Image 1 (cartoon, rainbow, N blue to C red):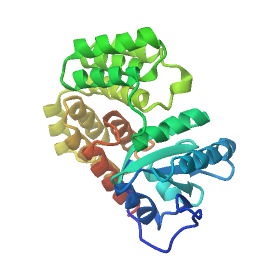
Image 2 (cartoon, one colour):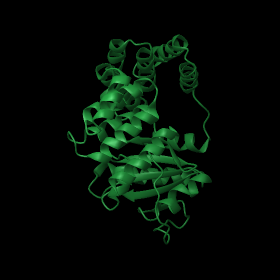
Image 3 (cartoon, one colour):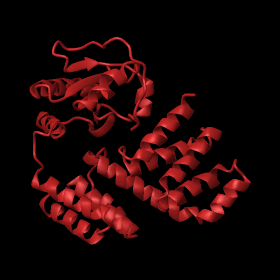
Image 4 (spheres, helix red, strand yellow):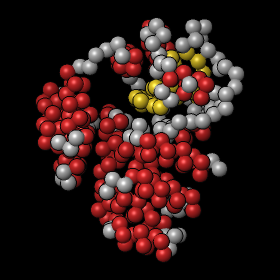
Length: 305
């Protein structure tokens, strides 16, 4: 999710204590991004017709007030602010994202229990220490990022012994299989994630990574695709194949550049295939990746120019 740039205007409607307010595209910077440099700001994306939103928002408001100023809550009606909804890739609501230092750092989609909302806020405010499962996930992630797939896989497997349906551990184990080239076992592991966890960020990321891996396998040689694209700049399929091949080799910024160029040339080609592939790449990399943040800004510049 990218940093959304808006124009500062007068203050939005606020609660007397200043912890809860409504915002718009014009006041998003002043109400969300700037305050998030001092303390976490939770953004509640909702719409008047959304029944679950009407249930979740009061729970959020209550939990934010109980946090005694550790976080703030900002609400935004997506029907009245469609540009932000598009930029933030809001596909279903209620959608809740937490911002810190001007960037999204956590979030969830759909209903949560009141206790789960409190835990979400405690994580943001730093009031709750990590659970044993969270500590094990951190160890597994560290090992994975260091390239120690065996240790990472063992750690994720130990978590699954305690919590067989843990979506983060299942997604992490699938990432290990994917990184080792075992696509079939990655697919089998992803399939074990229950439908109730379909919006879990870890699950979304590994799904996108699997999709890109399969695309890259069918794409072909990078050098040949670069030459094909150079000879015919209007060959969108060659450009998309090149982007997939580049991404598979860790060259994410060039891959993003190729997809942005395809969108710039013809955003509607093949039912917006380049934009869909770009969003999949963003999901695979995760919202905190600098290449994603830069790519989202450039995509918005193209789409809204």
